[in-house]
Image: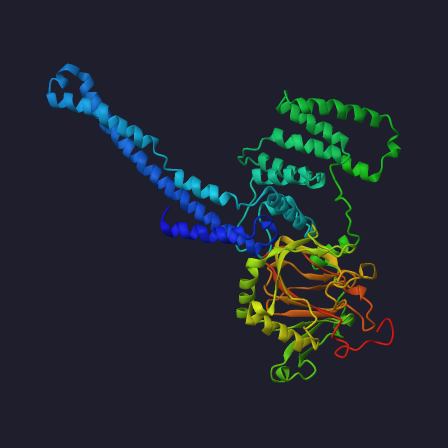
Length: 535
């Protein structure tokens, strides 16, 4: 390995070592894998060159020996009658052939294997592969994409062509199966069969696919199709023991079902018999509304409401700095009042904040409402870091700017949080403030509840990634350099439950945001209390 390559490897290992596992939760960190893979390709190509040079020497020697032995074997005694030929034969067998043996036994792969072995400890894990597969399925559900569309890579706003092979699709289906997600197992295994039927070459066989698919449809209650698929499997592999046992079991259950009154069949069962399966209901009551808004559907921005939304220059209650250079302010929603500010952060400031945040990124957490302890959750897929003003002058400058814009003090606010969303990165509907049954959520801070949220968009997003408010029917789309602001609490101090919001899954792009949560303490004279509960 060359000295510069060794230096490059050490540099990248230093980066990768900070972010072991959970690569799928941050596109920013996944970019490091691109450079690691590039380094491995370079190492592999160098190994190939060395191997080719070695083979070239061996071939040259073989050609030379073939010509010589053809001549010597035709007249051995006559050939050896010349003393020089006799000497050279002895020398070749005593010296040259052992030298060739040494050349053949040379391990030219040692450097490549060493490089691969070192880097492999920082590779994505099984958890990452499962998380990445779940992310694609989340996008599939949220944006109503069928497996064929995803397999062909036909996504809006994409710059690069990307397709899923038969083996890739099989990996998707197997990941779903291992998670007990039979709904997606069926969708992806059917896609595998479709691509195999189209003649695509693969290491995956139809028998393997039918093995997973037959059991998945059985788990979804479709006995008729389970029997049919198992019979197909046995026709391809008659010695498949598990399939034989499953078929006898399925047929017995089917016979028992036939004995029941057909009128007892529910509509869902009949649909299942036709190969149509419903997506399972999950824990989120507003799932349909939330995902519709993510797709830009069901937005309740009526003409009447639009007439109440305006644009203006904002000077932050005549703050001197803003009198000279006011910010452009645009109403995004009337009640609760949600506003967007333009040109809040410059490209240079954004890049600097990303630069200092990236090494600190860790899996984003949520606060357990009962214990107040921070923990990771499947409904929040991103990585975040917290920046202090001492980290860089740009952090202090951005904090002060947010104070000027909002008219609230940052002295009791939380640190600036920077977040980067991963594959299908999202944060499902949640409240930023603590409810009455979570009174200890911010007790440690001693600054009261989260009174307001200031959210900076630090990147454009090609598709997806909106901030949506399901109870309002509002959707706000990321625009680099802009920021949105809203109050989480009414003036009475009561939580405004209308502000329940979510970060939609990123379909295409890399989403960076930063946010500042302002707390109640210190705002008493900056945002006076109201006289009634609903003020």
